[in-house]
Length: 510
Image 1 (tube, helix red, strand yellow):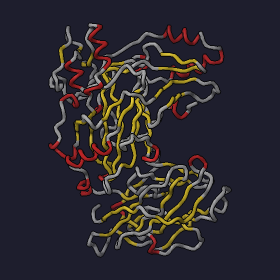
Image 2 (image 1 turned 120 degrees about the vertical axis):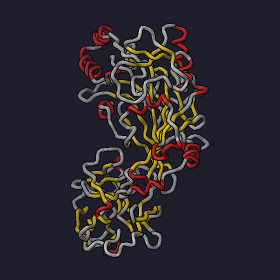
Image 3 (image 1 turned 30 degrees about the vertical axis):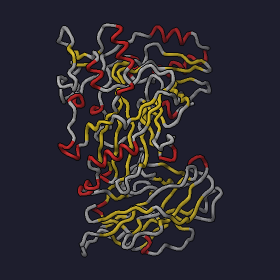
Image 4 (image 1 turned 45 degrees about the vertical axis):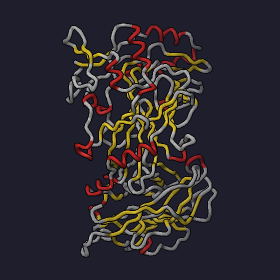
């Protein structure tokens, strides 16, 4: 890290804890790293919510800059008391105190120190980082930060995902965190290591027993009748096995799209997919400057089935709403480049998603993480069951419904893995032509189902009609009729970190 060597510590000494507040109202425990390697320094304390099993690590650093005038690390010159638990009205183990290291000029504190005593910590307890190795965290809103709220303090547990700092390290809002320099790319996995990571961590996807629309290999989709359409053409054309005759790059101008043939038998066969020989497509990229690796696993479904809704005890299919050709879904594995371990998995579902730590995952008997695919819509979930995305302002059960279940229909994403992109490896990975097709993978659709929706609405009890109307109004555009979906490289998450884009219905889930 540009003169700063980082290592990882997984042993801790408990300092202070609360028994209430925080996630699930079970409190949070604060620790100090112990058994720090010789020559390394701590950056701050560790916070871990009590509602999940204890497992974590924290980064420690060592100055290897050989810059005697301005080393990478320096001790603080003092501490400032930022918060104490005296006014915190919860069950707790004594009192806790949060201290901000007062950094020397040209340096920044990137962590906070927790004590169980009102006495200031010793100056050699932590180190501050040279300013040019820091960055600013401003109003963290993504999945990297889990907020534990006390009465007058927000402690952000960086949960292993925001590796600008370290798993469990905590900071107050708007403070600075260490960042990585370009030479940290040397920690990124090579192709052999990527294959080993895929073998170790590629998940098993379980499909609902009633699922009708399964994944396929992209070349299977092309070879079995998918066609390329263009507004100026009288007839569509077949697509080459690799997609070599698809328009490449540029932006979507609405002139091209991929569609199905008119023959009904062929169309239905394509829509069903080909689970037996389906490929999973892997995109490998650095995050946070190379301290972690994101392995994004893309699955292609030739067809996305209809949406389902629930009103009170009644569930029903919303006609053709939600149906479209060419459905791309993904999950993301975040791997620590410090020790090669799985830090978390991002489950993408419709227009939102969530990070889940290993302790929150389901696992197969041979220790593979499990992904549950939602019925017809194929969104990814970490647990089986039913998720109903409803709306605030009503006590009635109403919303879009996703159903997940473990069945005999499953896919080992590592069995037929294809690495399609790893830009940091330059020419070591050759991207297939279809990946650079930036237009639509399905036709523009206009369902014309207003009359059907009106019939459903009129059949409801009067006080449910307004909530049902709100549900319809908040559906993504593709549900009501819009352009077909785009491919992986056109997604906003392709070039950056995953964002926690929460569909409003999830926040308002019944």
